[in-house]
Length: 385
Image 1 (spheres, rainbow, N blue to C red):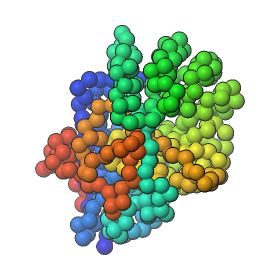
Image 2 (image 1 turned 90 degrees about the vertical axis):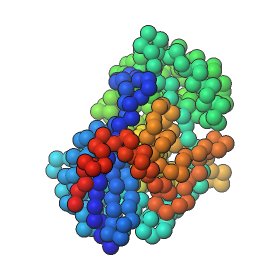
Image 3 (image 1 turned 90 degrees about the horizontal axis):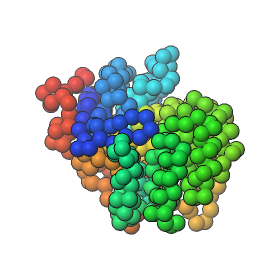
Image 4 (image 1 turned 180 degrees about the vertical axis):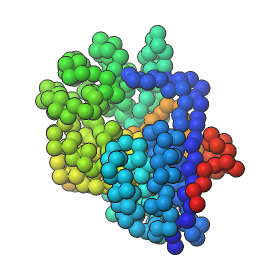
């Protein structure tokens, strides 16, 4: 049994209303997903995080290293792709292309063996994951936070126990928005803030000191990811846990982040940092530093299921009798690719999501929906033979 075919699908979902954060405005989502099929017809799905058409080109470049290989030997395949790209792609889009293929092979492997990915990773330490709502983006340039109150009420009614909001508009405006959100949420919900690396060190320190009274669970990407030493200095000047890492690649990038004592929480994106194969290694590395890991998750429902299986396998260090819930990012902005692409549908019950126990990632793709969102229609879709 060998891998026989790789198909890429660039999917586009045009939003009914654009939203923005400290860096960019989004009017659409465009994501590359990949289907890897075995000689017996068994298939697996993956996705890459980053510019979709560029990731598609990266997958095409990597395809000769994958076709004809045994899908059960996923680490061998990963190493072949890594070695082939090492000289010019230790970070960036080709790593994301590797990630998409790697995830699809894990899904394929699980389906071949009749086992969920969590079991292949070594087992599920927990069967339910607590999602946090990523929302409170800005929707109106004249009044960016005008919909915040409505959103908070919605998330509370849906059963979320934690919310991450956007900051990065400026210290005064951020302070007022965080203060208002804490008042609306009450004291029983976790509140996290994310500036998408909008601030310099002086500004980040000032904002931290102003919002510390509001019991912030973490401040995500306060600074640009290049500034490892500044991250460490910021940590020394605030009681708010500092998180980052969605812009890091491979275990080697995270080693630099961890050796620099830059963050309290690392946030690898499994769909860009090397797939499940490499993120498993990153989690082991983080455990040796005593640093928590909460993956960054953004994209289709494929990526959400990848995160569910991965988080289920994370060891709590140090262990204790009463285990804490581990959080998973669950973006709540408009996204048809999250809501419609795969089945069974994601369901949150009592503020928790079950880890699928079906083979592979526990899902399959609705190919009619796939066709609806594909920018190349079926008869023109890229197929690598």
